[in-house]
Length: 155
Image (cartoon, rainbow, N blue to C red; front, top):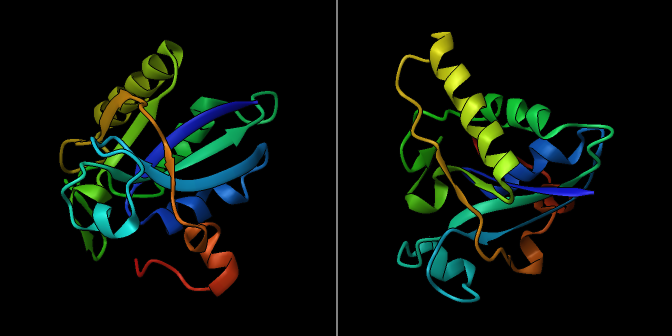
């Protein structure tokens, strides 16, 4: 098994995007990319911790590649919006790929550059591609939120 970490707005919706992908064996939502240890949802939403709402995806590379997950990531949100997705705004909702290896970094950069060159987007991609730091698991009530409560993120 391998892991990938993606941020693309409200982590409930990002988790939904990856939950039913064949080859994804687990997901969990949390916070990463900030400077505070063990942040809470309230602290992250306050915007002072520097964290993004993110999803850790555990996948079987024999069934789904990191490159395929990247394609899903790019299609699931607008990577040209800075610090917002849909009705959610703030740096915690930024578009980001937190790579866990140099191979993931190279694949993410190549994927981003290919999408940029494709001409499919009207604005430049602002997605952050950065080394993963500590992934702080979000509170239990956020895990698989839509499976428990239904609904969407309002897009």
